[in-house]
Structures are given as C-alpha cells and as structure tokens.
Length: 467
Ligand code: SF4
Ligand code: SF4
Image (cartoon, rainbow, N blue to C red; front, side, top):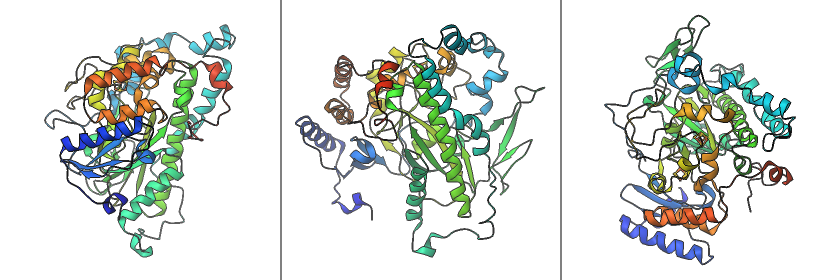
C-alpha cells in the first residue's frame, strides 16, 4: 500500500487546503521543514514531497482529469511534417533562415580564435562531446527492432510469477528508467491524439514526403511506405532528463547548448536501454526522442508536470530544465495520475520567459485555442510559441527562458520554497512580487563561462546536490 494511502485521509475543500498551504509557508519562512500534507481535494489527492516534487505541494489528479483543456472538435493528430525541424527541409518559408547563411562556428573558432567569451573553444569542446551519442547513436537507438534473440521464445513475462502485481511491475519499469539514466519517469495511457498522423520521410526528389502512421490491427512494423503501431500498444513511459543548472545559466552561451546536447544523448541512450529491458520481458517497445509523437502532452499525462508559458513542460523538481523522451509499449502498466501545482496560474503573472526571449518566440499575451505558426497544432488552450523564431536565434545556443524561469532554480532557497507554496494560493499579485524580489537577489542572470569552469563539477547533474 502506498505511503499516502496509509496516512489518515481527510476530505477537504480547496479553501481548507489553502489554509494548510498558508500554514506551511509560514513554517518554512521560520526555518522549519514542513511535514508531508496529505488530503483529498475535489479533483484528486494532495501530496507534498521534497524528494519527489522538490518541495512543491502537488495535486495528483484522478484519472479522468488533466491539467489542460483541449477541444476535441478542433484538436487533431499533427503531422510530423509540420514541426520546425521538418519544415526546415521542405518549407519554402524556411529556406532563408540565418543558419543557412551564417557560420557561427567559423566566426567564433577561426576568426575569433576560440577566445570569444561564452563561445570559447573550451565551451565548444564541451558542446561537441555532449552531442556525441545523439549524433552517432540516435539512429540506432530509436529503431523498433532488437538484435537480442535470447528472450525471443520465452513468451510474455508475468509479474505474478515472482509474486508481483502489475502495479509493482510498473514501479519496477520506472525504476529501470531511472537506473538507465532518466531523471524522472512516469507512465500514461497513450492518447492517440499525441501520435503523429504521418512520419516525415523526405527523399531527394520529394523533400516534403511523409508516410502515414496506421494503428489498425496487430501489425507492428516500419516499412518504406507506412508505419504500423497497433492499438494494443496503448501505454507510454515518459522520460525526463535534467539539464545542468549551471550550464543552462550560461545561456545564450555555448555551455547552454552543451546541456541541451547532453540531454539529447542521454535521451537516446536511456530510451534504447529501457526499450531493450521491456523487449527482454516479452513486450513490444518503441523508443522515441522527438519522433513518433508529441513528448510534452505525453509527459503531462504521465504526471511529470504542467505546461508553462514558454511552451515547455514545467516539472516540480527541475522546472522546464529537462529534455523529454518516451517508450511506447503494449506492456499493461499502471498509469500514474497527472499532476497540477499551479504553473499556468503563476505564468499568468510572471512573464519572465517572454521578457527575456531574444527572438520574440514567447507571447506576453493570453492563452488561446490556436497559434500563429504552421508548426502550432490548434485545439489546446495554452500559450502558443513561434518555434521558427526560437530555432533561428543564435545558432541553437539559447535557453534564456529556462535560465530565468523561477521553477528552474534548484530547491535551495526560502524564497522559492515560498513561491512553491504561494503558487497554490493563486494570489497572483504576490506571485509577481516574489518574482521581482528573486530577480533583485541576482537569480536568472547569465553565468559567465569563466565562472562555470572554475567549478569542480561536484554540483553537476550527476552529483545532484546543489547545496
Ligand atoms: S530558447 Fe531562447 S529564443 Fe527560444 S523560446 Fe527560449 S528564450 Fe526564446
Ligand atoms: S518564466 Fe515565468 S511565465 Fe515563463 S514559464 Fe517560467 S514561470 Fe511561467
């Protein structure tokens, strides 16, 4: 039985919950740790965990509730052909982008002799190493088949064989995901709306070619002309990979893109190894990074976080400082509940990401039901981001939105503890005041590469201790 179920349950209305949260804030500001608060709300169960949720109070929503709204009459499956990466290949509107005419690497490493601050040769070396597995191993990592024949004739593993339930097995699979390198993992029922309707498969003589993705029957195959993902593959394991706090703080310097590349390489490694783990248990597995479907709504459904103004997943523990991957499977895993911890309400007032976005990709306007870019998929109520503007800025090195987001900061200050509590009170004026105070204290400023390189690495993501 889960710990929260052992604790005495108590039904409360939101007004009572707010009282508890306020009490928690007061205790924290006085320097005491807060005990875990467990209660029922109208929409689910309330939990607080420093370890799991970085000190946030989080509402675990019951299974038919999600922390977003979509209109089923408008929202359709998106074709992969329309994301920015694909459009760069075929869309005439994308053929004059700066990356095609400017060679920033030449400017910085040859003309600038590798001495330009935050774009030095040392910074570029970290960046190049970070992308290695994504660039060289990604193609192999995201294949659907397995070279491993050893388990082929063993049939499907049944957890009952060793006295486990499927809930235990689901915990084991998430444990394996963390073992292989994920920072967070969660399980969701796969919503077919999040799967791409088409797979982008350009050819030399047909740059905009896309092949359909079918879900009928039991066919499981990638062919030249179509992909087949059977409906029985109705579970997905969402994986999040923390990006190094200090490297992201260097944005728009090269170290921030090293953090991004490091995330992409870890995505490929972990999705591949987790898929092999599942295949060894006799089940099908499709490992995917950005491909196959939309990682952000999948991660939200799997309880990893909520959507922020910056158009990214915001997690309680790492904020938006994560990259995402997923493994789709027919293993009958138990889904995790989606969570709500007040991100959109906080974003209504905050706007820091929009203020610090150098390309104007992030809106300061209200949430809407449709975007303004061909790469936006309308039908969800959210802030739509202009992905083209983001892509074109400064040779892929910007993470300013993640750098300044108050949720990115590790759980090491009373101020952020208070923000985390007050978020749930939905008192917007106070939220903005805290954002201002936090900036005045220096949070969110660019960290120079010279400062980064003076650190000994003990505070990197592998050490995971920011104190
Ligand atoms: S990465 Fe930079 S350019 Fe892109 S949305 Fe964030 S702040 Fe804007
Ligand atoms: S910077 Fe502020 S507005 Fe932007 S995602 Fe973070 S909390 Fe929301």
